[in-house]
Length: 151
Image (cartoon, rainbow, N blue to C red; front, side):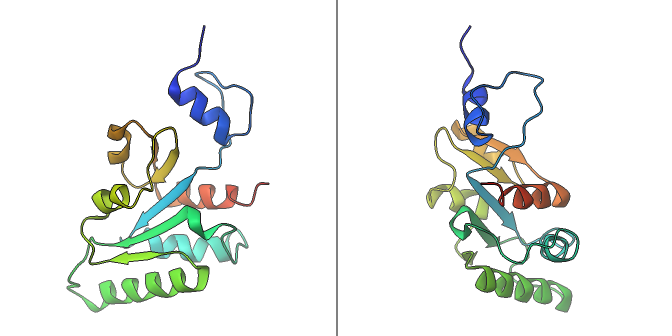
């Protein structure tokens, strides 16, 4: 029996000849997308360094940040999160998209999700466009970023 598109994509990003339903897979996604959301991006930035010892992402072109959830900001805490997001993006060389529209749509327009590619994002919206997407929580994103250090 042949493989599904999901099995093919996961095998490729896991650097394995094949995967099947039920297999545990350590995969390096093609793209990781995050959005401005309290308790999410700020936690990711802190945990990367403090808990996992990661100072830099290995391939900034695989990452994107979108500031679109709290625009305009309503509190000083929201503004601080935007400042942290901009600073982290600048330090890492990761693009930060702000005031370009809704990130879920803009990410597709920019070409982050593509056919036969894997995408780690906070939403499964991109999966509706024949891509393989994995919705993430903050700790999932840390795992994906940690896996970015794999060869």
